[in-house]
Length: 259
Image 1: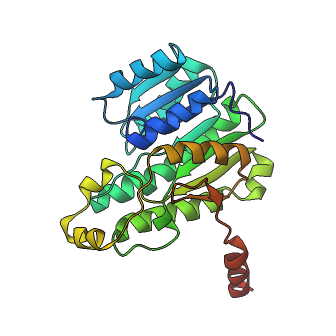
Image 2: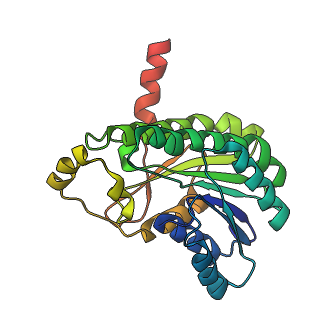
């Protein structure tokens, strides 16, 4: 079981509602520090002040970073290690709905670039314990194609596939860094404000069971403690996160096709 106490994490999209809950969950489980990466600094000072009050000063480091600017991301990783001394957990949470190009750049491309950088360059060198962890926040539409948000669904399916590919056991045996994904159901956030009008009709027809952002933080802690590398987890209907096991169905098909 992964021990969160004394670890340092980087969380992207850390100032939005889901990001805030992830940060709070990590600190509540005795993480030593969390670097908050976000392009929006409007509420960062207020958020850090609330964290200082609850968990004590110097537990967080805010870095204004656009995750599509990879040079700035690499610089943020270096500043995190310089500030806290180690790095053990990377959570890719930055997320957007709306402009198709930005959906792919932020939700998929940035997740891949940041995970690669964490996996190959930083976590093996700067982790405190025996293993590092990368958790990619995907979505249930990364498992079940959504007619409502086809571009968003495609990006999240890419995140799921990438997580499984990077997180194979063979890689873990050579470099002890676990790579996992958490796929929440619909979360009650402001992200849907950005949904294009031509998708709004589909949203109005569906009876969503919206979950509070808090389910993601709880799910993330469960995945950290219980998840194995390459595993995909689902959090829906306000229930505890469960592992989504479909490898047994997909892998035999792949083997048959390539044999």
